[in-house]
Image (cartoon, rainbow, N blue to C red; front, side, top):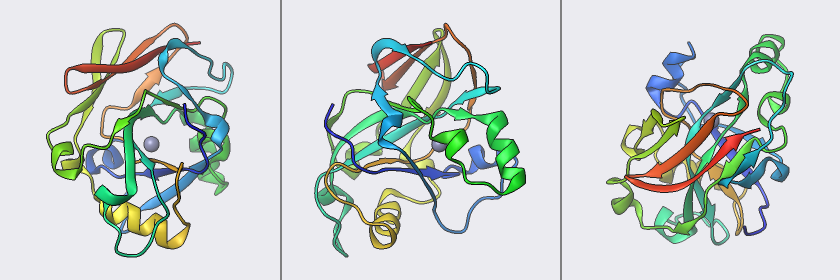
Length: 206
Ligand code: ZN
């Protein structure tokens, strides 16, 4: 896996997912960060997750790898080098607690191994991506299925928003948000990620 620099994540970028958690649909992209140590490989091995911090949810997401510095006017096809599928693991009980207190999300979203990632492949371009359905199975059953056509903020809007406010450069990752169907996972679950019908990676939850 290439070295990771910044790990940006987008919250509530699919309407049905915002609604399933009882959240308002945002008026502008909602961005949070994870430490680079959150990233690990979905290469069929075990991904160790926290054991005693309440419920852990999976969120299946399309992940973009940035290939060059952001400059105003740059297009998605020009700035994105590769694409992968990832999971934004979330300690949901911890998140509810810190949301209520108004604390930052790091404890709920930034723990070690909270952003595992499949192998990357060359970015096929926005047009080709419209025909891709990404999905995840848990113990063989499909639990989430998404397509960029259902995003509230499209990839160009996300790139411009993040690039202008926070900066984007080679090596940065963007987890672009999860479609509906998030749910709990426990030790021993087998999670597998698919790009249309092609398996792209997976793990056993440790
Ligand atoms: Zn997410």
